[in-house]
Image 1 (spheres, protein in one colour):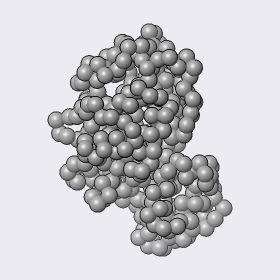
Image 2: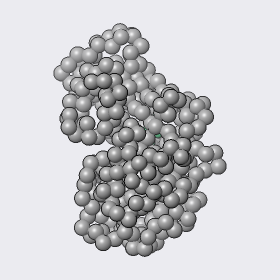
Image 3: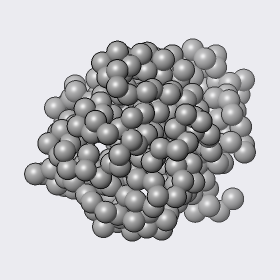
Length: 324
Ligand code: AVJ
């Protein structure tokens, strides 16, 4: 396959749906490829989710605290774009911390629909929101939000507001981000609103530090994928034989994370052998960055009309409101 076509497909949920569904198949495909790669979605086992939570509290990792501040400081204005008796549909909910800011500022939201692949996390967050916000009807949906899914029948007649915070959209190739927004538009239906958090292009030193922190938490997060392959797929990765690398690729507007082999070695995992040259890497993540204009253009390509953008004093992060 041509390198361009391969990179377009690389992080594509559609591609993964067609090629394989299991972690083992994914590893055989990705480590068998040249260059080697793995999808960032496999970072989030229990240990990886815990490490990501630690990342969000690092001094260098500005996105989480910046987005929370944008949402809090502009909550009333953002709430004004949410219709009466609306249902808030959160894509990849995880923790409901950000949604709660909107729910508190927009009492006209009658229903909250967190969509997440993990049923345990969903149930836990759903009962917390029900307890703290008894006026909101909560209908959790356990689904892969990158694929088509049905909204609960109970919200059919409500105006739909999608919510996709965290710059998770940055993990998609731009073509796949467009396809995701198009699909979200299909799921939410005509007349819907969408609120999306997107990390902005900024000074490279700020970007590089955010993904290569002094305490080494992001390094542990990246290396944890090796630990996960060892545990779940009978691998024999030596974590001391790889190092974390993260850098801003300005030409492609993205942070790239890699795991670099410190010497020539052969690793056994998922029933196969994979050879590494000294300095060879596994490409483990892309985190795309957008200007306000480049994200609005992408949203328009996907059939959405940008109506408002909220940002912070440092111009680090943006919260976009889109209408269909
Ligand atoms: C969860 C995809 C938004 O790209 O900033 C953080 C993941 N990777 N540090 C990001 C991540 C390394 C994060 N997202």
